[in-house]
Length: 81
Image: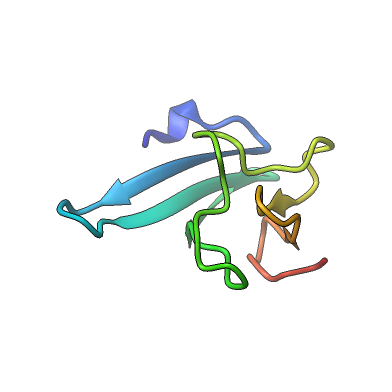
């Protein structure tokens, strides 16, 4: 992932390592800052996104789990809904 590819707000998935279980992460740009999180829903244990950039709610004020709708604060990663 390249920072220049991130909108504000925006998010982009990345992976580190190879094999069957690479680390999957997400870079998030929010209000001029960049954050990195593990790309895994703490409730369902699978990736948050269904598409490479599918991390934000439609109004772009929170990150969302695409499969069950949990919402997370972009600047802390904490579950807010």
